[in-house]
Each structure stands twice: as C-alpha cells, then as structure tokens.
Length: 123
Image 1: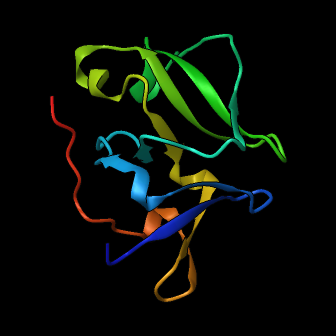
Image 2 (image 1 turned 180 degrees about the vertical axis):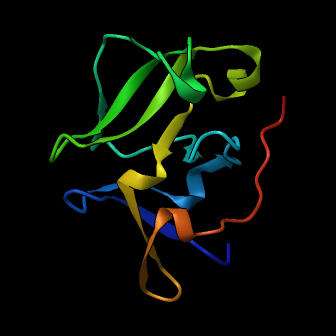
C-alpha cells in the first residue's frame, strides 16, 4: 500500500491501530476510520451506550478508549438501523481523536486530512 499509516491517540501518542486494518469508507454523517483490528491499547467497557442524537441516534454501542490516557477514541456498534448495520462489530476511530503517522513520508498529520484509498466491505 502506498499510504501506510499508524494511528496514534491524540492525547498521549499511544499506538491504536494502522491503515492495513482499514476495511471501509466512512459514512458521510460520521467522521471515522473503520478498522477490522486494533491494538491491545484500545479498551472498552462492558456496558452499552445508546446514541441520543446525531448519526448514532438509537444505536447501541461500546465506547472505545485509550488504555494509557483514557481518551475516548471511537466506538464499536452493537445494534443499529439498517443504514449503519455494516459497521456492527467493527472498530470506528473518531478522526478528531487520533493522529496519523505516515510511514513513507515520515509525516504526522491530522486523521481528518488523510485520504486513504477507497475500501469497500463485501456484504
């Protein structure tokens, strides 16, 4: 892959994942990176949260946090409407909560400014 990147926590720079695990394009209403796998430094509580507004309205999800500093870095959907069903069980990083280190250019860049190649999930 041309643009390999490592995803770091914005709060403490802990490695949370990488672009080799990207598995889908973000839904237009969410600013997230969708991954199959994350590092062991990503944790989540056993209790479900329910979205009360926005794109996650009515969805049940687990909040993902950085093990090192506790920053909320994303979510994994447990249940949702049909429009977001393809995200269930995947790891969604909030772009605002992570920083990307681009391996080839050795640059650090905001996740919201990186355009990764299109990846689609097969139904």
